Length: 156
Image 1 (cartoon, rainbow, N blue to C red):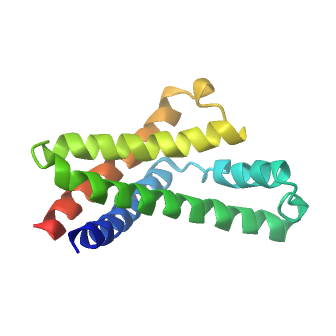
Image 2: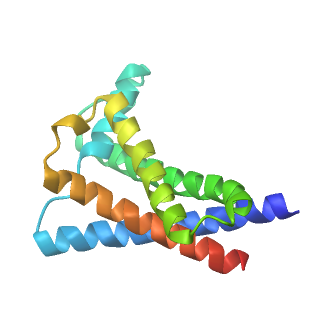
Image 3: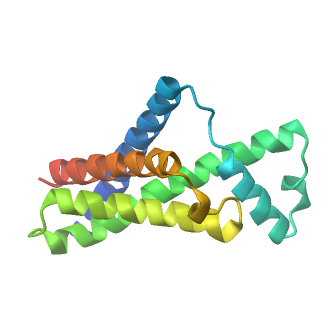
């Protein structure tokens, strides 16, 4: 039963982390006045084209909105998935400080996200400026912190 419990708590903690990441990202957008990223939508478009799903590859407004929604859902799936993985490994790593686990979880989520972005050809992280990396790294660090602390609080 503890396996299922840890998976569940990991998923909940992943959801908490995902909300924290979104809050951090949208606060950055509000403070700096920058636009929302179109990279998730581009990723979905490129994946749809590669899979031969022309219905998601067209450029009409409705399809563009669909791709944006699917891209956001991919983000939630990644956040919950990393949370579940965290729930499976954290009990075996109780001796590791929570801050180190938080950084590792945030790094894992960022690597998953940026890896998918690069693999799909939606963007090339090698070309990003320092501000782009900060806009990506800071929310993922906040994700990791929220995930790790909420998991430990719930698993208490």
